[in-house]
View 1 (tube, helix red, strand yellow):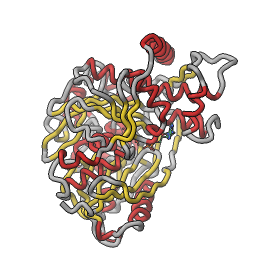
View 2 (cartoon, rainbow, N blue to C red):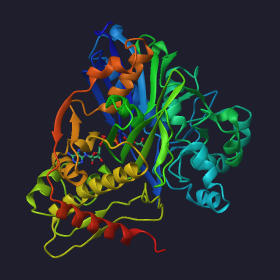
View 3 (cartoon, helix red, strand yellow):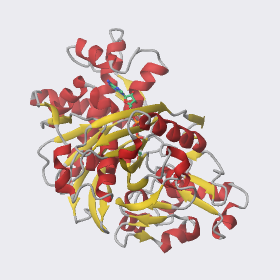
View 4 (cartoon, protein in one colour):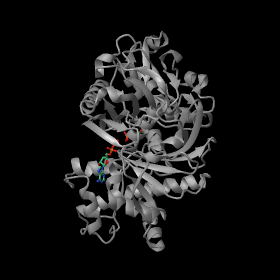
Length: 495
Ligand SMILES: Nc1ncnc2c1ncn2[C@@H]1O[C@H](COP(=O)(O)OP(=O)(O)O)[C@@H](O)[C@H]1O
Ligand SMILES: O=P(O)(O)OC[C@H](O)CO
């Protein structure tokens, strides 16, 4: 094995674009990052400039590659914010509209119609998803309905739809490859997770012509080379996965019952269910953990739409925090939460409520409440939502997880992880490399390039850095969870 080979991982996230270079042992060698501009053109609307996504990706890759010998780079792995929909011209590569971001709720009326018409159960059975505007299908339908002539052009094969990795692959290969991987496809609400193909009935329901859709590939393989002009020489693209699925790989959650949670803008908990797609009675999603050599491994997922956003909001909009990390110190200053709860439903509530109409609230304020209470309430809200989802997974039959593996920008917060361990009554482990999403993309690319011979061969890439043990009294836990449930009840629409 040539472990001195390097892998370039591209992690195109909601708030930033990163390029990281790893060695064959999963050690980070170089990185570069750029914040991505967010556009909020109206209530519940969230967009990104697809051209920014592209130019930022090129820029960070070049900056990271400048720190290493490019001839040692064996392969490229790409991972991405999922569900975000891009529609572009096949001939020119020009996007027809800003990318519609996963948090965007403009598809909600169409979702309501589909539910009213009785399609919910069929959609759930085939895609594993709850009917919600989070997924790409209603975003694509909106684009095809809104842009003049788009549906006809799409039917003639003149347009390409893709999630962000698909757009990047298209651009990086100079338009040679229009592909998506199975994990990203599984988030569109157009893909049948059992047949592993686009579903004709769903395409008919959303009036999406097959010609606009990318080819669906595995998460690892030799897909295509980047154009030589971008990085000085062609680099083979060998790994593709949605960011939460890449994090499953980066966290080495490769056995049934293993669970990871990534705390970024949102928070996403995935539990590996092996070869079996478990059907949830708690409105969790059935999704792919990954697909290798044509064989899907399934997962249950709970999606929290707003996690780090709450901290970012306190910092950028209210000016309550100077730095995101200050939230840990402030939370630790208080003996308890003082009865203050925050429900950060800025763009509705995700699993298990799926309530696009819910909006955020801060409850229980008194004259004694200060900025420390706000910081603590924001951090606690993320832990409460995580606890709700793990309880739902256990109820759905996921084997009892020994602990939780965490990563993402917010996993740097020791106070939150300690609180979470107490709430879950389980150890919470943070690996040495919390950039597990990028690591997962690199490992998949290494697998596709033949650097690793299988998942077991990658096991040494995961190293524990700190495990937070549960230390919370049972009565306290019960009181806190009761306070949280009451707060959620107050933001859910009546009835
Ligand atoms: N020490 C911290 N404590 C709490 N939240 C943090 C901390 N550091 C970063 N965050 C939050 O984490 C988010 C960034 O995480 P990241 O994984 O980079 O996000 P994404 O991949 O979704 O763009 C931001 O919303 C930020 O507010
Ligand atoms: O960009 P992130 O890391 O917040 O992840 C976004 C998710 O993939 C949305 O489903």
